[in-house]
Image (cartoon, rainbow, N blue to C red; front, side, top):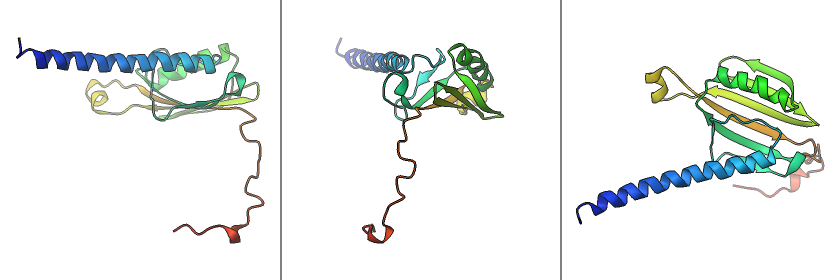
Length: 161
């Protein structure tokens, strides 16, 4: 029995890590769905924890959401092409090439979607690749002062070595 204990412990440890990762995804998706309730996010995507930042509530949300999707860039382009107008967002600008940039507007807010193909060893062998998606949302009142450094006295700044 003692010889099976390390294997059992390792199995429990690995499965608990999976539970924490899944719990993070569920909780983050709930928060983002609440804060950006009117902005579509692909259901098959995973939120990347470190570069994702969301500030504000309601219609005053600004921030960046970074996702990994198992859908190709073309499939995500179709998803956003269909789902954003349905939720009231209007396409303002687009660039479609290997990297896709979409800019949407709604009620003075702007959302930029940047989609790139995921590259890696798995994609090389399978021939199929997913997408990395960066969504940036800006509220019109996020920048209050247009020239914040206009009155800055450069001669009296401290020297930083």
